[in-house]
Image 1 (cartoon, rainbow, N blue to C red):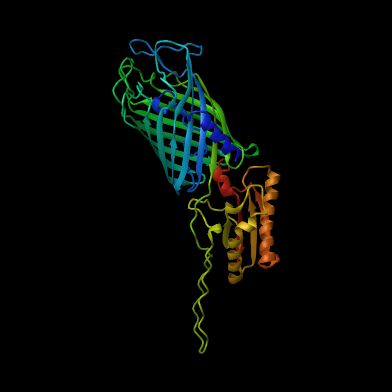
Image 2 (spheres, rainbow, N blue to C red):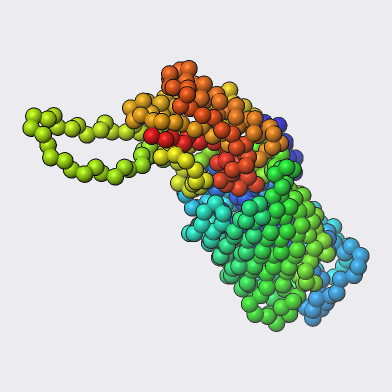
Length: 469
């Protein structure tokens, strides 16, 4: 609640701002879904029903280009010639199993110019463009995959020499690939930026930029003991062909970034880091510092499924004895209610014992609690108990699993308390045989999703029932 109030106050007392990719002065673009990295896309999409709000600010030094009368770029000095404060206000939403969307509202908040002459400079502060994107993941599981990201941004800056006067929208299409190896994630993005430039701006000695190739890569290392990810990224844009007023190097941009993402709590992640130019071109700052915050909320959308029972081999047919009663088919199995349903892209459980594996999802698990489980999951547990009584069983193993927030010992105990609370309900309320129900706890040590983001932690908080018939 405190974070929501702080975010509202920040938006009231200062203009909404974001990076200015459409204006081609900065190429720092925080992703709208807030998953995994900072500016680089992973193939993962927001689960349906989960939304992300992001607010990023970045301060870049010596990022505005200068030109002489012929249009040639003037070399920068070692001193600070200009500085720009900008940021992203982002919104992302999971739509379907493999599709999410996002919107960015970029603005320039502040600029300080110390040189005279022809230069790339904003006439005033405020919104510079509106950008929207959609991601489709066509391949992958919890440990990586591939996706395509399509985005469109419309420049709103008047007399922008990089886009020209009255330009059309800029279209971007990127191919994304990533992989998660234990706690280290790798991602590569490569794409094409289709421009629709307007007419050259009078009195400014450069032509609007043409189509570009865009690419980026990232590595992140998750450290659960610190609730933190260390992230390294590189990102760049280069023109497909040169214009008459600038070399490819002059109108290219590239940066290398090093930062951290700290999970403050279940919903809030804080970013902090810096970047520097990899090549001395337009829009590549001498250095940049950034900070940001993501607030994620919501639960995954589910669909009803039936409890699956392992099929036994059919017995051999025997001759019917005269006068014997016909055997009746077994009664239909009960349908598991929503509190025991599986989201479309829910990762499978690790292999283990059990003819049936049923999972109680995080819908009813409050953070740092075990006593609230039964009240919220009563219907699901009642249905499961009824099934066990009708079907018959030899043993039920109840496993408690948590996310990585908190210490190892704490999570081991929390997993045990949750599993034990459910066992107590099944034994004391549903009158199941206590000798047939065993409790185990794995804490945070058997995750089935990435603990480095909100929805992964939500998936990892679960209770697993392994049923032996």
